[in-house]
Structure formats: structure tokens, C-alpha cells
Image 1 (tube, rainbow, N blue to C red):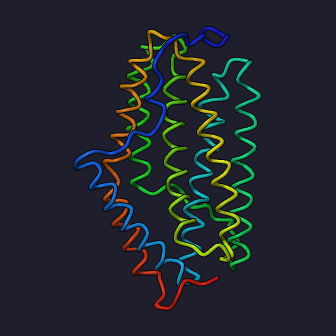
Image 2: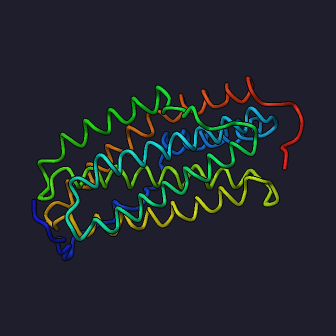
Length: 244
């Protein structure tokens, strides 16, 4: 593996930005968004529902931390190590913040919630894509790892943007979610810039196809995940107004 960054030249990296859904994809995206907004509102009406949301975020941050430790740090060239270490520090801080929020709500946060079955299936499919595409890049698995990381961070940005939108700015969790959202936006830019540096110009087409496949996997779980979240909202959510 080449230890230095690749000069991107005139390659087209428009694929790094989230594409606007079209046709049935746009309809599905709107449906998922509406279902999840309704689920969030119901979950925020009870302490149990809010604790579930915090545990879901905590599980996601834990999974990201493990991915950085297990997948990116071991194969990162020296010029990337500081960047990965900073990203890892951000994710560890998020874990601490969500754990503290849980403790404030009567949950000791000791028993960590593992990613749910749907998330594990999604991760497995992403890992298969990484192995399939690695041979197309001079930097090997490092490119699929960052491509998957980019899509995961874009998903986190979308999730947190939606969550902040349904809450009043005076809600007790709003500052925490807004702070993590700002970090996730920075992580999106970090992943985009890194991919521009490690992907050779002649590999840009392979990167575009890889990102399309990663996003297709993510979208394939959208409706199922939204309905599961809505079901949790009915099971755990209260009947009053969203608390503060």
C-alpha cells in the first residue's frame, strides 16, 4: 500500500455528496422521514422512550468507535493517523455525552445496547462490498472503509438533523444533539477530503459505483427501520406532549 496521499488531479468526485432521491426513491425517503418524525415525537413523550433513543445513539457511537479502532487505525498510513485519532476522540466524547444523558435520566448506561439486527445486517452487507471493491483501489481496503464511513456519517447527519427539527430548542436534549450534529458534519467533510486524497483519478468511477452500492444497501433498510422505530414509539411512548 502506498503510504502517501494520491493527487486527485481532474477526477470528478461529485459522488461524494449525497444524491437527491428521484422517483420511487424520493417517495420512499419522504415516507421514511414522516414515519421517523412521528416516532421521535412519541418516544419523547415518555422517559422510557427518551432513554431508548439515547441508547440507540450510544450503540451507534460505540460501533463507530470500534470501527475506527479495528478497521481504520491499523491500516492508515502515517499521514492519516492523526486525523483518525481526532475522529476517534470525537466519537469517544459522544459516547461519554450520551452515557451522561442516560444517567441523568435514571439509567446507569453500564449495559451497552448492541446494534440491532437490522443494523448488523446492514454492516455485514457493507463489509462484503468493501471486500469486493478493495482490489479496484491502490489503497486497498482503506478506500471502502472511508467510503462506508462517509455514508455512515451522512446518515448520522440526516438522523440528527431530523431529530433536532422535531424538538424545541429549549428541550433538554437539544444542546447535546446539536453539538453531536456539528461534529458529524465535520466528519462528513473529513471523509470527503480524505477520499479525494487517497483515490487516484482513474479510480473515481469505481468509487462512484461503490458509494452507489453502499447507499443502496442503506436505503433498502429504510422503511423497515422506520416501522420498527414507529412500533417502539407506540410501545414506549407516552400520550402527553413532548417534554422539555
